[in-house]
Amino acid sequence: MTGVDEARATWLAHTAATRAAAQRATAELEARRVNDDHDEQFVTAEEWLAAHDEHERTEDPHREIIDEADLADVTEQRADDTRQAEPEPDTGTAETAVPDVRDVAAAEPDREPDDRVRVPSADETAKSVEHAQRALAEMRARREADQHHAEDETRAERIQRWHTDEAEPHEPEADAGRDVAERTPALEMAAADD
Image (cartoon, rainbow, N blue to C red; front, side, top):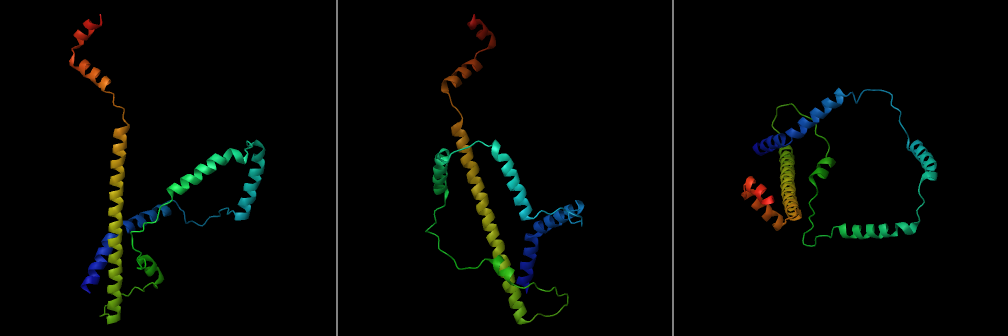
């Protein structure tokens, strides 16, 4: 039971920011009166399609006529880009048969809140421990995903800095002239110009 209590405390601390954001969002929606019952004009899909078709027909005479052959290069380029951008499957990674914790939790029925103080049965305790272990596993997975995301962002920033450093023009002759100008007093420069 101590493990279940610790897992619940960890879960409460881990989800506190999400719950606070949900409360702020609910308060903002209430302040904006989003859920007020007021008559809105709902548009069905058929009505929208009819209006869209009418708009297309009125705009067609004003559009430039383009032959399919004009678009051939663009189509081929898009196909090449799509082929290059498609991720290649990683053959070095093993497939795991572990179900996603969110899917398992979504399939379970909601538990009724029980305010009675009593000693839980062995089955209830086992279910509570299993639920706590799943919650801890999900938090561990989130933490690892956040860490990987932070590492990816750090790497992207480093690559961007390298790219920026390489892209800056570096002209040694201009730098040498600037160094001479910085070391020469202004009066001597004026005399040398005459």
